[in-house]
Image 1: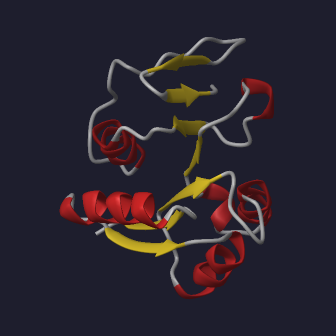
Image 2 (image 1 turned 30 degrees about the horizontal axis):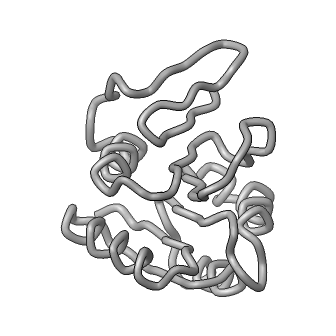
Length: 139
């Protein structure tokens, strides 16, 4: 069973994400701020991380920087979540836009965890990233 850490400060959205992932047979831990996300990483080694970029106490950007710099977390797939972004400032390869589409989130998580075949909604361009259906992917 794949393990997923969800760092989202909106408690209602975090609960929706957790329930959707648990119903899809993932082991899930949810936290509400960046400091708690880093603390949870010491107790729970995730296979994938979903992180809101606008976390309180320690931003999602800071959490991502920590993940990139610390092995084995540097190899863990990370999906950033936010209502605002620009491709130039996107700190991860994967992004889900708010309002969050839970079905789309499950498809992306499933693909990154190796559960599903690649879906046609991913668009890859050699020099630019494209956005489709609330997902951004930077090759």
